[in-house]
Amino acid sequence: MGDLGGQSVVPSTFLARAARAEPLLAREQEFELARRWSEQRDERALHRLVQAHMRLAISIARRFRHYGLPMADLVQEGHIGLMEAAARFEVARDVRFSTYATWWIRAAIQDYVLRNWSIVRGGTSSGQKALFFNLRRVRARLEKAEEFAHATRDEMYDAVADALGVPAVEVARMDARLTAPDLSLNAPLSAGAEEGAARLDQLMADDPLPDEQVAESIDGERQRRWLSLALRSLSDREMRIIRARRLAEESETLETLGARLGISKERVRQIENRAIEKLRATLVSGAGMPAGAFA
Image 1 (cartoon, rainbow, N blue to C red):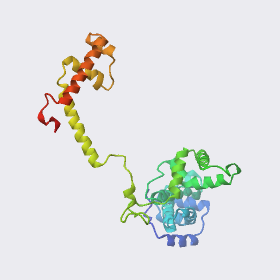
Image 2: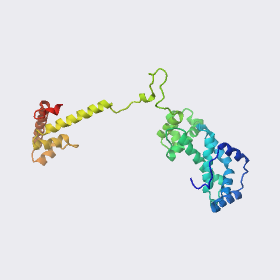
Image 3: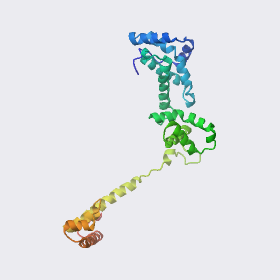
Image 4: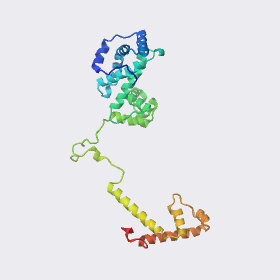
């Protein structure tokens, strides 16, 4: 927020009452008040410019009543946007102040609606904001058109997406948000459910249960220890072949590995099979392993 010259936020009831009593300004009066504020920091000029356009802020605030937020709060936010516009207005732009202020008022109210309409934060991008505030209007207009009289829900989503320049999947998600109220996960379930049960208790997790995670961790560590001990029974060449053929992320071919070791690919296969049999026998019998390896 820019320097507003000490302007403070006042109750919306007072703003509405004052707006009805405040006379409208001519173009020359607007420019003179804006010049006095810009050049002389005349707070009375700023106050007069703001009060003369409170009708505009209240009018724009009324357009957002259907979001279920208090009208007093909407007017208050419109007043903040109006003060911001007055503080930033430049006479050199050669436009009416109401034209310039409309954008700031609407932006302030829209930001308030997005922050308070739902406890779930949404509409962070410009496309999502446009979708949030225009979805119902665009869909109502399309439904009146003859070509969409019998359109399916997906066809309507596609049409709205084309009209607003957003993906159809975003239209579907926003429609679900606008048609369903916020629900607390801690709220009790409907009648007939187990006493004390809440929605949170019904959420399914893809992760294993804590006891399963612990068991998997212990078993995995035990198996890695067994394999490490079993690998010690292999010769150096057997170890190289097993690592290249079975333990590497990308297994080497018999031909490539044979060329590197200076033997035929058939000989590599024989050594690999022998090493696997040796590992299997060692793991099954536990030969050469410490007594605690199977604990």
